[in-house]
Length: 199
Ligand SMILES: Cc1cc2nc3c(=O)[nH]c(=O)nc-3n(C[C@H](O)[C@H](O)[C@H](O)COP(=O)(O)O)c2cc1C
Image 1 (cartoon, rainbow, N blue to C red):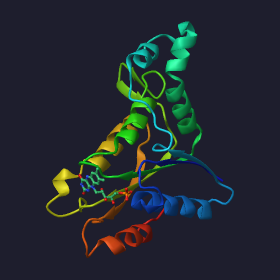
Image 2: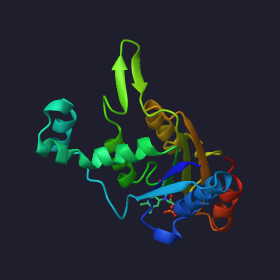
Image 3: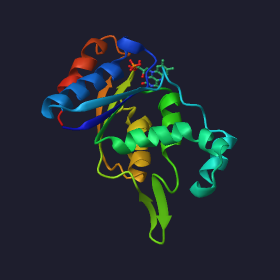
């Protein structure tokens, strides 16, 4: 039995390829781990704000001296980190937008990456504090980035591996529904991606 955190970031609702792929991954995890629970976070329906001054001031105020205003300013971050820490498995659905991730997902990353809470520095350098998690990424892209002439533009998978790995989530697997903009590939892209899912 696993606790699954399912992060959805495409605005396309049920039509979203990354979301459909993410649900397929969640179903496979549930089949393999009967009794698993799912905490679904839809970053489009419940958008996290961009980082702002009050939040950054609060981040850098020692926890035992934070005022009610400070606590309010970091509530979104505290809640997102609490959901993350509780999960055994994180499934992140993301479309590829302008060679990056959608801004809603970037906001989530900004809220969970917190010095002293999800990472720290000591004499040996940085240390990720979000340990013992398995991460699956359901990535949908109009083009093809795993191979071929656009491979050098494959920034999303390395970025998520780097930033989540920095926070301690080093066990990350990416499943790709690629070529959704190609007329001859788009109809098979999702099924091909679902078929590629192995846990
Ligand atoms: C705003 C926007 C930007 C996009 N940028 C890219 C891009 O840079 N590269 C690419 O291959 N596809 C790009 N696409 C295509 C999407 O990655 C593709 O349609 C994907 O399947 C969308 O995923 P979804 O169905 O989960 O929303 C873009 C689509 C939109 C709407």
